[in-house]
Image 1: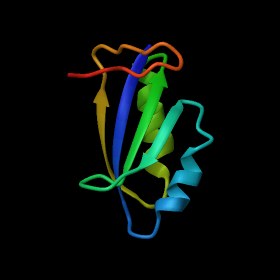
Image 2 (image 1 turned 90 degrees about the vertical axis):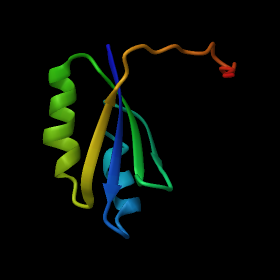
Image 3 (image 1 turned 180 degrees about the horizontal axis):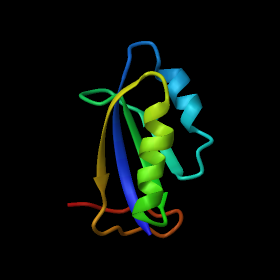
Image 4 (image 1 turned 45 degrees about the vertical axis):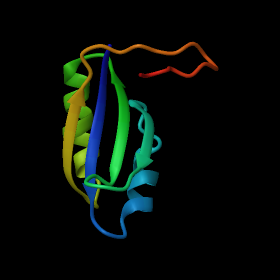
Length: 89
């Protein structure tokens, strides 16, 4: 399984429309509007690199209002137990 974080820069005023457009995409596990350099952060889960490519090229980047994306592919992922927080530090 491939886990990826996709950061996006959006056109001003398109935030709600973009979020509504991506919320039904099956590969998207969580999406957040963010403050800072990037306006959007998507957590995705993909079976193959081809699925990730398809999601980025044929779905996400075709949404009007998305100006730029950066994709971070996770090398290792740990999960907390349901109901438990992960402690860092």
